[in-house]
Length: 240
Image 1 (tube, rainbow, N blue to C red):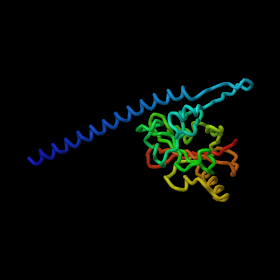
Image 2: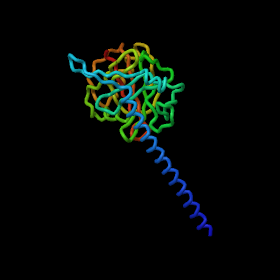
Image 3: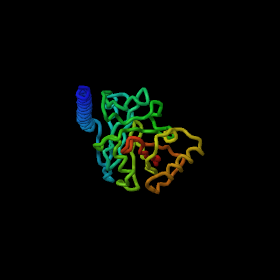
Image 4: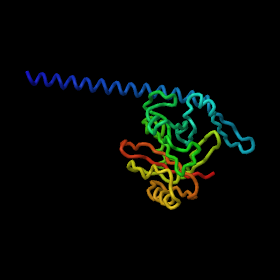
């Protein structure tokens, strides 16, 4: 009799776990589909591409007026060619506000691309830290793994658009590391900054051969690795 009761209890627990897992999967797919639709509509509304008449170079303009109507927390846009990384950057009232919120401030498994709540919106910090989730469908910052794996080569541009300017950053280091406070440091003395950059280069999985001007501003892009325990870290230095 006791064995039968125990079996029934185990069975009920199994059913509850199964239903809970199924519900989470459903929520994930529902959130993912909704986010995709929102992004596709957003790109059409706010991104303008034109050809420069003399050089034929593609010029991209971002409609920040429209973006701010959607959400005033949007202050920049990031693009990395040959990846799916083509997103607005947000800054919330707390450091983790957009960890599970989309640009419309609705719950989203994918969250948003965001910076710390105290980061300078003009990217005037010595090192601006930018976060994004590692999604299994190549969305958000999952394509940082392409940089780590060497799929994008050794000459990688990261473009940051704000209302005032367009900045180009060159990747000079990429590696996987434990989460630590040293990586997310955003202000330095001159010597500290040089040590930080040199250490990042020594850790890099790939030799990028990028000439470093230690006085220039940096950005650091961070996402989870495949285990969700460590971080994929990409450092880039401003060149313009």
